[in-house]
Length: 349
Image (cartoon, rainbow, N blue to C red; front, side):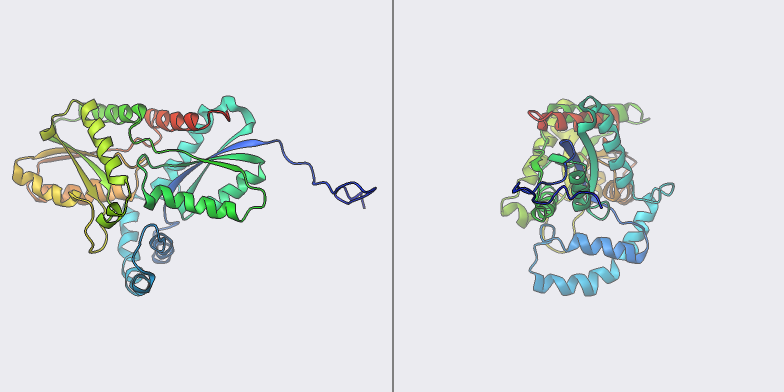
């Protein structure tokens, strides 16, 4: 047997094995996606998501039986069919996972001058790869500083805060914690606003019709969450105001709505789906819709907006509908993520 390098000999203090050279970790975190579209995969994903107290604030005594006896019995099947329509069959994964991975890989190439001491990784709040798993992996690589980047331009307790909660829980279990920074939201960042505006201009230039109106649709939250102090709706409105100004759109040519309502409680209004049904009655027959709050296309954009809301608009008498894709891992989208990361790494990198 070789010598015990950690033993206490000659009255010397005990020594740890040599540590790896210190690194900086950058962890991009997005919402999540099921591992497959079958009933049980969807059920596991929905249970993790809908059990989050940041997402559902209903008292547990009321929510638990509703979730486990009703929602998790009925919703996995229909939701699985929705995911099947947008599924990346080549990689056998949801598009959110495909795009988030690509964003991390492209960010790594863009900040390569940081050398091997800068490690870029990605994770999901719900599903795999999990945030705790990737934080632990970065720690094993010797990261003594960690930048967490929740991929949400507008802060919301149900997205940004819960991503942080999970990271904090992972760190709470570690004896040797990396120093943590969390990227601030970028809802009003000039690079982000211009990237959105450029994507609108490019998309509209490719059409054979001119929209009567541009709709910016954001994921909604219950009105009660806003009344308790969540700033998210105000940040969405600020993004919408800046985007409208960048595009020089008069008020009658631009509107902001909230989508993805769940349950019976009142959510932030106006609802996107109701707006789709009302616009044709107001003489608005041609529209373009964009989802500025999403950094990557997912079920809420590719199925809910581009299919469900499109059908609602056309069935109500609309004539032309176009969905403008998220920034995703496009050059402009990566410019935004890179700018956020470089801003937050100042003093470290």
